Amino acid sequence: MKIVICDPVSPKGIELLQQRPEFQVVVLPKRLAEAELLPVVADAVALVVRSETKVTRKVIEAAPKLRVVGRAGVGVDNVDIEAATKHGTVVMNTPGGNTVTTAELSFAMLLSLARKVPQAHASMVAGKWDRKLFQGVELMGKTLGVLGMGRIGTEVAKRAIAFGMRVIAYDPYLTEDRAKAIGAEFADSVDEVYRVADFITVHMPVTPETKHMLNAAAFAKMKPGVKIVNCARGEIIVEADLIAALESNKVAGAALDVYAVEPLPADHPYRKQANLILTPHLGASTNEAQEKCGIEVAEVIAGYLLTGEVRNAVNLPYLDAKTYEQVKPYLPLGEALGKLLAQLTPAGADRIYITYGGHARQLKNVDPVTRSVLRGYLESSAVKDVNNVNVRSVAASIGITVEEKKSDEPVTFNEWVHVQVFGNGKKLISAGGTFFGSPNNPRIVRLFSTPVEIPISGTLLLLNNKDRPGIVGHLGTLLSKHKVNIANMSLTRDTAGGLALTVLNLDSTPPPAVLAELQKDPDISNVKVVKL
Image (cartoon, rainbow, N blue to C red; front, side, top):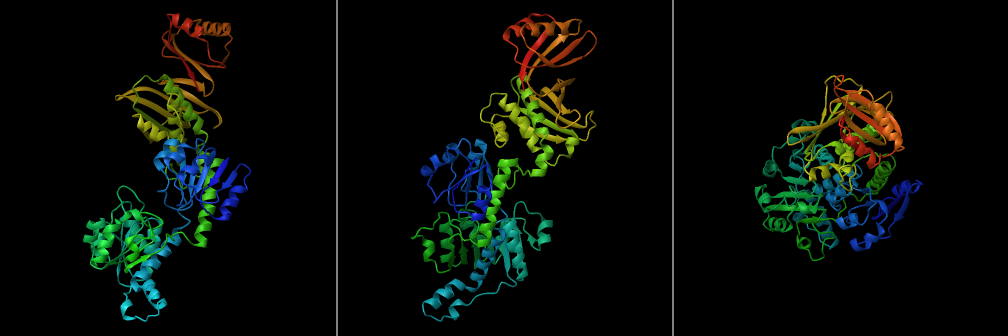
């Protein structure tokens, strides 16, 4: 499996990958532009990047084997997540590697703003001694507004509290209890932070909601003389609006490590602002952080490629190795249920409802099983290029909603996975499965609300027939005449002499002549062939 290291990462991380005989590791000598990268990734299974290389839609489409993109760092805005998901490529980051490093830089920025350290240093280097010009303020007793209370924002808040600052935090996913546990105050809205904060530090990703959130309107709501730190993403700030706020002294100072365009152009107006502190995207630039991120990105990529373990994925739920082993037996069962129902469902399906009962309720994460059901269903419905990563988005794109439920209702079997397919508000078909004896022996045990016993392999011949003597012999004779062997048989009926459901596992696909003869029999109906 070819792994391409696109940007410089820790040698220890590269060594971890090189030690695995399964991997062919290619380390690029320099960052490549999109056009240069396309032929390099043609046979790549994994890409490792930092913030420099752009993994665009074209790059992803040029790599048909690409299974995973590993970002040595937190932000993944240099990766087209939507294109990766549709392609079936997992995107993983390393959120733990640079948490402390970025938090420490943010706090260094706060101190530098408060005491004007960079400007004082520049003055001293120029041979001056301007003590009065660089009079600063203390952090103690000041209010720090933290926008975004993820890992980094939380670490900054802890340091600010240790310095005697009042911390007020805003994050759409922050609860009041969690804020209190950290020692911060909970803000109901971002405007509340703007209104009271002496310093504001940003720790949010770029999303449609956060892009350009620090604009002229936001600055107008802030306290006069506020100071701003941004070590998150440059696109969060409208640069022209910040410059105007600095020139009017509405914002007394700002410290920036990130910019909308990087590297920052030589003639950028930021460079002319005396009350700006600028650093060249140093958030993760410590020896410790680079080593941690390099090792972590190698570990998450190797874990995914070798065991299916999913850690730190931004487009696939977390699945550690232990949880994977727990759900692993259910994956072929789920896929078989999906395949079976897809080939028996009439047109017009728009909802799939999956129930987990018995011991299946204890699964820590049922999402992989649901994805297996969907993959089996969509692949057997002739939907192309479906895999576990993109299967939910593909289902949504063709109008199929997916619902899951862990049910406490009593069930006949120890493990129970039940799939129902609906269309226009009506149930079209359903099937359920379990294990016989061990997880290595999955069976479909209910179909059309009727008990059956179907091993999940090979070709199935399904039909309804009148419950009469000789029908089984007739089927056996007909298949034998065409040299089709029966591997397993499941027979069930509603009442004696009533309607029966017959399901045969066959070693080969019956020829059209068999199906034609069966359909001629007035006692046989609904003849179907299903491939599992």
